[in-house]
Amino acid sequence: MSESGPEKAQEVLDKRYDAVARYLILANSGGAVAVCSFLGGKLASGQSFKWALLPLFCFYFGLIVAGAIPLGQLSFSWIGHIEPEAQQIAERSSFATRFGAWAEANTGRLMMASYLALIVGGISAVCALAFL
Image (cartoon, rainbow, N blue to C red; front, side, top):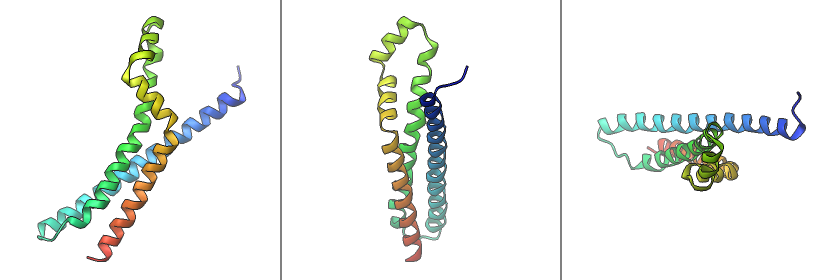
């Protein structure tokens, strides 16, 4: 049986969202690790670390926001595996399903916020390193 056009398009879109979310998680976590490792060297030599606060905050913020995307998708995946009566109760009352619905509705905004945090964190890290 062949999938219809809208179902196929949604499947392709979901795969692309997953790929972008993985990229944002890896990029933001890589930026945070890079800043932390450079920060460790600066602290060992007794230099100031205030320059690292903005990029570190941006990378961690981007990581948390990007992590909300797959977490929201996971909150829906368990509902299909329970009994219908329990499924109706879970859909009405569970924080996980409310969070999943919110994350699904705001996936684009979450991705843009994470990407913006990645860009601001990267630029602020490069600027801070250039002026040290």
